[in-house]
Image (cartoon, rainbow, N blue to C red; front, side, top):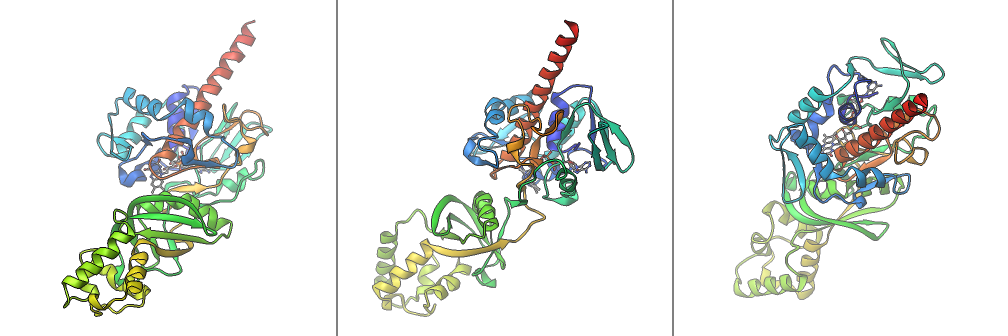
Length: 402
Ligand SMILES: Cc1cc2nc3c(=O)[nH]c(=O)nc-3n(C[C@H](O)[C@H](O)[C@H](O)COP(=O)(O)OP(=O)(O)OC[C@H]3O[C@@H](n4cnc5c(N)ncnc54)[C@H](O)[C@@H]3O)c2cc1C
């Protein structure tokens, strides 16, 4: 069930004796939107701490056995050349997600049954019931994705069916942007800076990321925020207090900046603090920063007290935003939550509740960070499941032959 990314990997790795039921008229629709259309399919810096799941270390076996190099080799063997950025993010050489989608579909085994939406599953009679047909199964692999980008097919309706026979954990949205209680003013809208973003939950430091931050009317977005996103979404789900602090001048220690401002004030008696800061910050941010420390832009830099300068620099290096809610659910990149992995075998991906039932990809309660980790998960889980099923068939044949 599901001809998305995980379903396509599975259909390449398993064998001909397979039917893929997909509600869209094509496979891998969401895949086309990944990595801004370029498909960031894995990361050279793959580590287990980039993942989260309800079952402790549930993802360990599959990600270690079928890791990023295994995925790169698999794509290369299909004839897809790959490339990577200094950040470790990997892409097809064509920088087009369509390359990966089309070649995965071209090489997929089995039969794709398009425009069939699964509406129910009859486990007693081994039937998948779609809006158009009843399809018999021996083993059923569910790869129906999560709740993000519903227009791509994964609208989450399937969880209403899955809930009847499996535990589904709380569902929310990760790798997305956030509303703040105290966003910057309209003047700063769209300004992109490179900053260190530090996340604090209930006052405790959690994680930091240095990358792009973009100021919006609603709050914050940009790669650094997406990097922290899954932690933020979990904290919001738990109704915790969430703050992001931005260091807009990470390369400069506080004392050094204080010294520089004092020196510039002394040497430029006719310059305002607003004019001095023009060499420090994007000019569209200056008024907001000065407002936060209750300084007027026209104040002469030379007239600032030591306390005022210290306060100003601290604000530039610790610009705080209280995060109140997820801003964009529909365009979030990953689902937080899904099938509770405590009830799924981490090596074969078979349900511990219903035999011959398997789950792979984003439908499981496993989320990876921004940077290619979720497609990697789709691959690793699909491969572990395919290898497990093939081994099971070999065993069945051996038993029959004895
Ligand atoms: C905008 C965007 C950008 C992203 N960029 C990246 C990136 O660069 N790198 C990365 O690693 N991850 C990225 N992701 C995340 C990644 O796309 C997903 O984690 C991945 O697609 C999950 O694969 P999946 O096969 O489990 O689910 P999907 O790819 O969502 O596939 C599920 C399939 O099941 C079908 N389906 C659902 N319900 C039914 C039903 N009832 N009957 C029949 N069929 C059904 C759907 O139509 C869909 O085709 C991005 C996500 C988004 C939204």
